[in-house]
Image 1 (cartoon, rainbow, N blue to C red):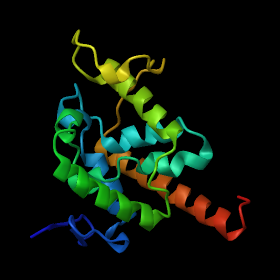
Image 2 (tube, helix red, strand yellow):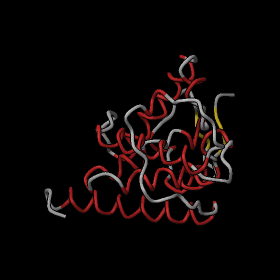
Image 3 (tube, rainbow, N blue to C red):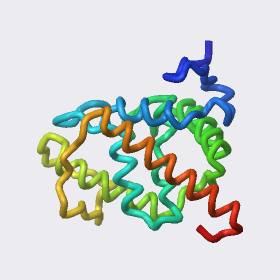
Image 4 (tube, one colour):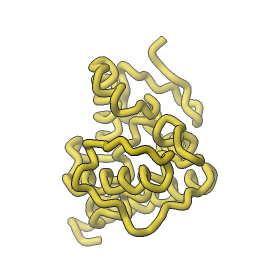
Length: 184
């Protein structure tokens, strides 16, 4: 068996994902219930909330990509970076899932640099606000400044609703822009 059953009841094949298997509500639900840092935060802080915060840091034309930048985790889970880097098989599966998500939402599979930068700013902020204090340096955060504002996490239900609403708003804006030839 190479598939999982999603919240909506749709089977999602991890080895052969297709765009029609990708549903916005499944992504919102799963990401809201997945905790960042494999659950090692001081309190629950979801991947959905992280994604919303990343989307708020990028220009409007890249907000959909920012909101979906971790959407693969709705299907394959949130694997910690050090482990992900040593598992090429996992990376291949995650890449297939990413391609299906990009096809479903008509996104370029290559994320804009501003999304990567916003993701790193949020990582620095999350480390400061949500992780236990520890002196070890995270090399990936060299030169990255956290936001001044502190994170106060919301609950999973709130994160799910906010994520889903923002995703639907982004999809409506994106489709409206295409239908009018570029004007929003």
